[in-house]
Image (cartoon, rainbow, N blue to C red; front, side):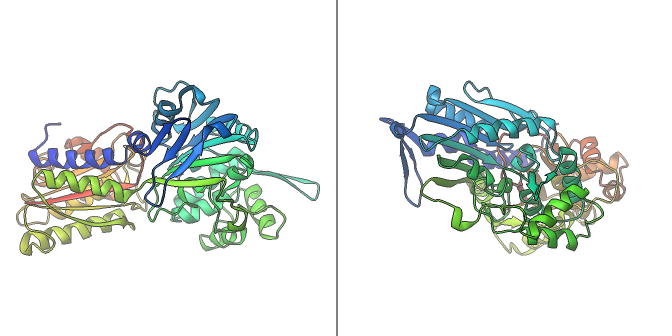
Length: 458
Ligand SMILES: O=C(O)C(=O)CO
């Protein structure tokens, strides 16, 4: 697509946001090896581990950004790594030498994910107190490491199958539950989530590098908190099932497991009093806020007056578009946030309650909803330019990171006779934006810290 100067700027600002949360760069900047002492530089005080204290180094992980993390670890530790396995989304790969990559499905798990989970679980269980385990965790990990629970209660086998987990995932994604609620259920139906991975690898020492793709950065929610203690309980899981009226929608085996857990017949997820902070270090290496700071720097360099609104934008994507439109008008009329040219930046993760049968993602839906607002503007958005995009490069089930909206795009869509309202009604933002050349495609970025929105008012 031939881009306008402002679209170029938006793309460059977004690209700087991605660069700031490039997991390879973050890990190679913060992790150093000198005289066999591995040091993680942290604001709260460095962590040092003497590799001579360990007989084995294992690397395990899951998530969309995990391959880049793994490449950084390989570049630092090289053949000191005895064995490693990571599970990543199809296509989110890097060239790795010591760590095996398994590609699996996201957001609904598949057989490959189960295979990865089995291999990771058995590697984790082989760890001793002379093992250093490096865990690489990023968003997507919940679906990429499905380890459906199996347990025995009073002689009866409780087996949750992959198909059960797939159906639970679909029901949860469709019911409007937020990520902490979805993950509360996933943690309580898994052998690895909710800190259970940490139980498997005890008494090993672990360094757990975590990239956050959840608003608020709660460790027990990111990738279902495989290495952190869990605040939620079986009782919470049952309340969520009831709140969203899911009893008839989730498979009987899954419901039975949650009920048994609620009656104290299954072992709970890892709780705070079980978490040994001296043996397990959870290190948050990247967040949406860090990406926004990168975006801010680039926008300043390009000559804009910049305001970061929030890194916690959530709710319906269309409502967020309305908010950006309100801000754009205030900015145009009164320079309410910044002097013009202004660049207003936000981040977080919105949702779309799907009503149609079209194709799209939350960012494309937001861009198209914003375009709809520009269509009602007397100035037809000549001075206003918007980009909403997902940092992992896949907005919804599409090959685009997100979409642009501005006066030029509006004009083109009018010339082509496209009805924004009709496409929105069908949740078909992808096809609309594709027709007018307004999709933003980055390919898989191998990072993942939610979404970024950038609004320029000239
Ligand atoms: O994307 C996932 O895996 C989550 O559960 C949120 O990090």
